[in-house]
Length: 420
Image 1 (cartoon, rainbow, N blue to C red):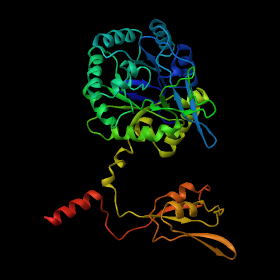
Image 2 (image 1 turned 90 degrees about the vertical axis):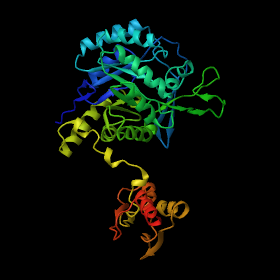
Image 3 (image 1 turned 120 degrees about the vertical axis):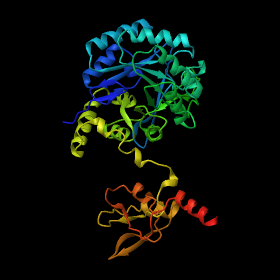
Image 4 (image 1 turned 135 degrees about the vertical axis):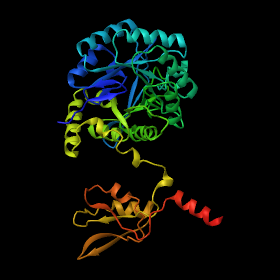
């Protein structure tokens, strides 16, 4: 069995799987149930001045038969008194001393407010703090959450205020509702952050009811933008994690968040630079027991790869992620169709003929319909293999080129030198 323990900026956990700050971590009862189920850590639902939540709060986007492909919420931070949360954190940590408990915090951008809440929370024995600069709705309208998280100067300043008094590691949670997340990640690093976490939810409207014309969800006939998460946001989150992981100015660990639903997702985030991951929507959809498959799956994967510890997986793919200008323009792959497996649905031909490069021909052989790729016209776009419903019917194969590798950046440099 591989060693699944992680150490994120000094926060130790028996495995990389944490629950994110959200409804599943709203109370001691829930967090203790999660730890019993096998979760390695939990980021307590954001603490601050208790607020009033609305009804209804959640909506989901289902697509092509998949329930909850995306999830939307307009719920805010904790609606329970700080004293109640602190007592439950203390009791939970006492019962589960080897599990990570991180307190998510959100207050007004005032130095004294941050100092006060940090001291109170650390007194009950949390392992770390997560500064919520990401929530895109409700709190942002009050100058907190993503309203702070979109301003690099505020991210840096508030992180610095927290570090003035914090005795435990400080994680800064970043908003994706920004042009370039590395800008605010760099600001958090300058402010002294021990780690960063990303992504928080994305501004969204889940839908409109075509019968009533109300937004989904709605509160007495009125709606508001909410935060989007779930499997649909995973590619966005993975890119943002990767961009920060390969940035030399962001030299702190990353806690990956965004659409993580199984061990494969977790492994991808870790390969792209995340030390551990946080999960919310999948737990809300399927319950805490999903962590059992995550633990078993990651264990088996590491064993199969001959990797002794989960921490040895972190960042192994980061150097393979670069800018477009560094990609080899002379690399060549083409599609290859296996007519013994093909069911002749012709989806590949239609997709290629209508929307790609018209390089798949239809023909008959012994009165049997067949498909063939004209390699000289195939650009290796992958579309045919993506739309094909049968595994193994279409594969993308590499073709060795007699032309030396050359990137766009190298090409432009060569052109520049020849023109001088």
